[in-house]
Image 1 (cartoon, rainbow, N blue to C red):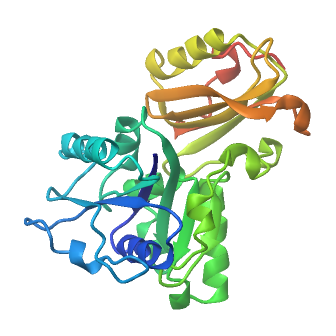
Image 2 (image 1 turned 90 degrees about the vertical axis):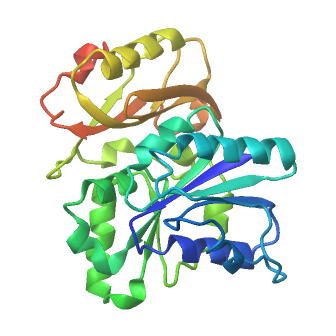
Length: 307
């Protein structure tokens, strides 16, 4: 059972996307955990129907307005309910609150099987949301960005939006949509995202934003698995840096497989992929670090990386 996190600012089209998913696909068995503002449960649940027109019955609504913060306990309870009572489910789709920092929920679910993080972005509202830190984080943490409401913008505005999203999250897949209608394979065909999209960090410039900066580290260094864990632990837990996102491919000594690095705030994970280094054109360790005021820090020294 895999978890898909659906993020996006208020009015981005998250609920519309959920309704589209449930009505257009019958291949997978899905449970939905929706976060809504209603004081009473049941307001939106009857609106969801499956491909045959039946009301979607594996549905757990959270009456509290914020999954990421005050509803953490309820969220885990909902997941545990599905795991225990619906073992044939293949996916749990969680709609996060539009006004909440998604990193908190991602950290809460870190030990679970998060297979995809999707963020919906309203194309026609990007300019007014650019200074909103929650909106920016919803973009930065995504594996898949759905640029929605393209019907409300012209071609030039769409190109500017795409360039901005690629600037903020150069590793994410970006698709343009109207009415939240996308190819469902982008949601359910889970890939080793950092590898399958042909990641080449050499082509990603080190960038600055009013709020965030990104640093790219590329090296031939190999380290023992435990040493990588210790070094990234020191980076996140003992330095005073404000790191919000880590991604990368690591070379581990005496191992032919690539290791994937994922990190959100002070939580990180290094795990073996099923991709052999010999199958990759570029076989160097690559690390992407995003945070606040990090550009001047000597990451190579802390991580003991040699040129």
